[in-house]
Image: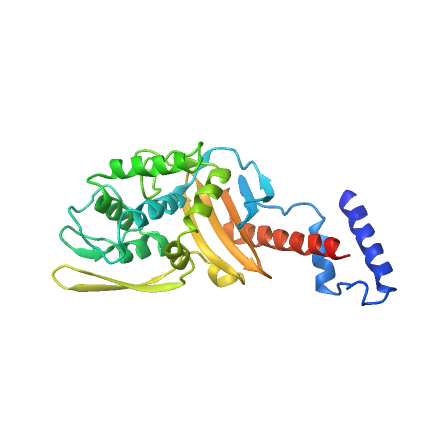
Length: 295
């Protein structure tokens, strides 16, 4: 009922505006009018347990749903892994794999002891295709152990005011324990990460080629697993994640008409349906607010 009344008021105002000179007021038509009407309706129906969408530049929240609830975040942990890696290593540095890890058993690049790979290619592997061993070996290139690297991740989270975030590993798998955060904290971490132009460049890449050496040169063509880059105009990153316990998670940024937003979903059943609905809602609201300001 509330939604119908609000839309009726808007439509009535627009009809009245239509009788005036177009030099005094621009009147939306067709799809644009529908978008404005949708903007004052109820928030989108989504399956995510926690959700948040905000203006990326200002951090102002447009909509939230249980954004302060602490939840498992799966591979969204790799956002912080990238932050710490970029602040401590050069992209062209070559990493020698010191050991062949046997603890990870999911979504691997299958690197082996004594093989060599650049920091850049490790980063591309775990950010575009979420390869978990690439994240582990990147962490071990900074510190002697993953635990020491994770300490750096938690210290950085504390610096950023992400007080409800706890990292226990660098990749996001639930090997011995899990990584926890909130949509609010993921917003802080991702906005900080995006200040780094290298991070921005990598998360918006749809494809990339990497290589590593051992007894011979191995090459791999990567395709970003973030399908939003391919299915929604204006999307510019950032990261997806999934485990059985965490559900489907995503942090996605999108820019249209000079406005850039960030959407965070935790514990979703379908991020490919939830994300477009959230982004549609945000951009419709921007357009509606602009109409009110101008008229």
